[in-house]
Image: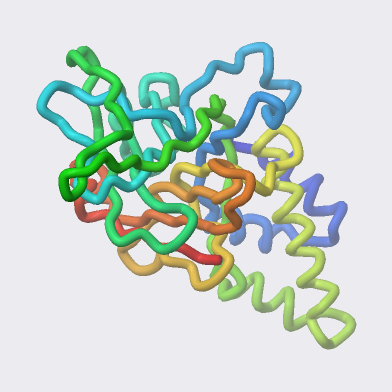
Length: 265
């Protein structure tokens, strides 16, 4: 579960010297997410009931009449929507079928696509080989890796602007705010680990929640995070952060052509 009862939150906050009003203000700015991780990164307390829900890489499985997207970007992620925990996220995903993510992770993509493949339709695996200028060409195919969903909690990167938090930082006894800032950072990390059920992995795929960007966050204004893919979660030798954002309304309506893609490195 991503929810954490208030007594446990306040007990954790007390360990770091964070006052209760600050805790409530911070938690009001939190958003749930799903982490997709290899089995070895699933917390031990969750492993008995862990079920796979996604796969990186591999070849796309598509319905009759649906082709590999025109840009021929590699398939980086397939998500079994029915296998995800339901009622966790605050964005709306399909209840069943598969979401397929096509994009470049090694360098900024010229084009990208997310496709929803409905449940129950006839599908077939597509070859990575295609014709280009009368000659055979090959789309990149990443090694398949099975991923498991684990719930988590994320925080708005602008949370320091709240009145209680600002007062806490301004009232730091050292006068420079460093001690209070360290306390808040440590508390935020501890709460994130509590929600995950263990130490959160630094390299993973994330669905929903707030982004954890390396540069400026793309989920601002009306845009919310749809998915975040660390390059190393797909290819150990790729060091990028790939972020996909859209509006809540567009995501709920499955208007995936309107999603925006950003790569940070």
